[in-house]
Image: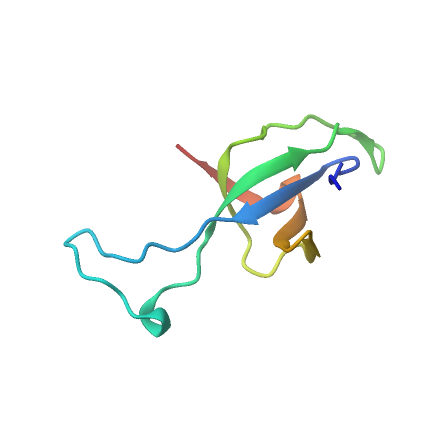
Length: 94
């Protein structure tokens, strides 16, 4: 099954948190920070949303940072995704 977002929606998947620090220290499960970076899985077509023309600026494969409590979490085929509006994406990570 695949997800095809509508309008200005974007399907993202959270990226796993690092298990080691830059200095090589292995982190325990409780010491890991929740990931704040996600990968864009699918992007809606944009278009006219609530009377405003929306141009999609993110694309499939981009790494992004989103608002902490934004979006709708879903589970499909055992994988967790979040569907957010493009306006909930704060930055593209390069």
